[in-house]
Image (cartoon, rainbow, N blue to C red):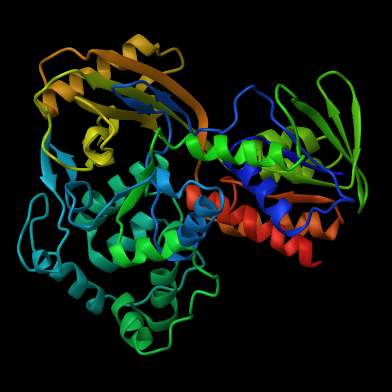
Amino acid sequence: MAAILGGGLGGLSTGYYLLKNCVNAHMKLALFEASDFYGGWIRSIRTNDYIFEQGPRTIRPKGPYGLNTLNMIQELGLSEHVSAVLPSHPAATTRMVCVGHTLHTLPSRFSQIFTKTKPFSKPLILAALHDLTQPGLELKDDSIYNFVSRRFGQELADYAVSPMICGICAGDAKEISVKFLMKTLFEYEQTHGGVLKGVVKNMFKPQPENEQALSELALKSQEERWSVYTLQGGLETLPETLKEHLVNNNVEVHSNSKIEEIEFVDSSSVLLRNKKGEILDLKHVYSAIPAHALAKLVERQHPHLSEQLEQIPFVNVGIVNLFFDSQETLIAPAFGFLVPPKENSPILGVVFDSCCNPEQKGTVLTVMLGGRWFKERFGDNITKDQLLAIAMKEVRSILKITMEPTVSHVNILEKCIPQYVIGHYDRVEYIRKYIKQHNLPLSLVGCSYDGVGINDVIYSAKAQVERDCTV
């Protein structure tokens, strides 16, 4: 029997791909979730009037990873539940940053790079030209902030890239590795001495084709050029359907089953001890739990591995969902706005859910708070009522909404997003080499290692399972 630890998206996707590629009548599969909830940080609060998303709310369809997720969604029978945002929609064209409590729309069309638009003090085309005048700098890794500042100027780093990092991983661009989002551009600098030089030299090289067969849904997303999409009834529909798929295919799914320790016997035998003291004898373990949680399970037998896993930092994020039951929309159509860290704001940004999702009635907003700066801004004992008051103060000041929310919901997501700081990818490579060198029957999947987005987590499971099944 093989076991999966964790019933979040990573664990459920691992089960899905094991069923698809490896599991047969002679191999049993079990999934262990420590809580009574499946889906990890994907959680949707549903009513007839609104959907409050506690975690991710949209999925990007582009690239091999995005197309892979669409393939999965069609195979699960969820195509009819997809609600796409087309490129002409305000949620695709209007993304803003808040500087000095004033909202500024970021350029979204090529023609806009030739004119000066606030908060930038000069046309963005000059940022591109800045790259041509800067010498290359040989580095193994760098922060995404330093890289963008060096190649394109500090304003682009401050007002575009830094808030974007806040929105993606609630992190500090001055700490996050450039390889997190701009690996190819960084490699252009290292290889060719500059980003634009690298772009030009690679422009006429044949691009690798996407080798995976595309579903009708994936092809439709390309033809219609979707910006993002969501699922009717909220994104929790995806993990719910995945869990149902596993159960229907005879996977043993155990809730409230926390594993207390992993003991490796040899390369094809591993023992799991649960909180009841029971010992489970298995052939292989797929860990889809956070790196810091896995670190505790292997600490006694492999303290060095545990130490390396613990070095992957995570941050807390406050989530405040607001529903205003108003016939008249209270916001301009847009995806929402993010706040650059240099503004020292208590909030990371606000998503305009009622613009992104046609199911929403009235005005629905999600305010994100804290992240990398959670403790320094809120301390250790912040209450949900205090977070709500802080969120509402910012919403009133920035969006000029004076009415009280009809319904609100506040949650503090503790250690919810890993931070891919400088050196992260070398650390993950080292961890996997350690596992291989010690012949441990253990595979790592999930957001701790190969990407924090929905598409990344699903593809991480697919890639790991396919590697294991071909060995």
